Image (cartoon, rainbow, N blue to C red; front, side, top):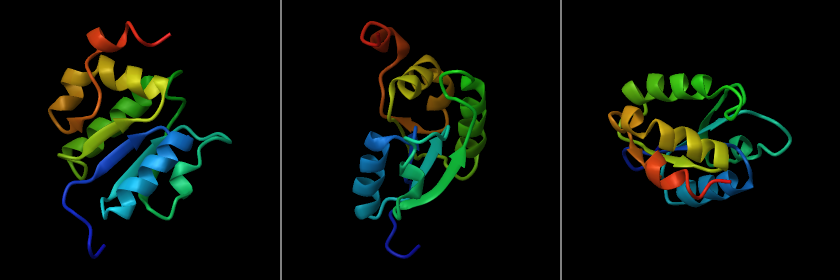
Length: 120
């Protein structure tokens, strides 16, 4: 798409905070992919600024599906994108697998040692 900057972002979750992030980043010509588990609250994939969206099984209930999708795309089309969590389950998933994902993308979340004390 004309005017997009290189790299981009991947938002993990599709809720209202994710929607706001997609609108903000997309408005600054950043290509944004949304990985979400559906549900009535998943509005981010429907933003005009979402370049792509991917539906996975529940991020909290079956994190391996989201993790496999992230690794697959990170090695290919999402390499060097910034990965943003937009919910507690997404933050836990990214933080627990920080070292594994860090090889393929930039991560906007601390490692699990820091996060485990603040998630309730």
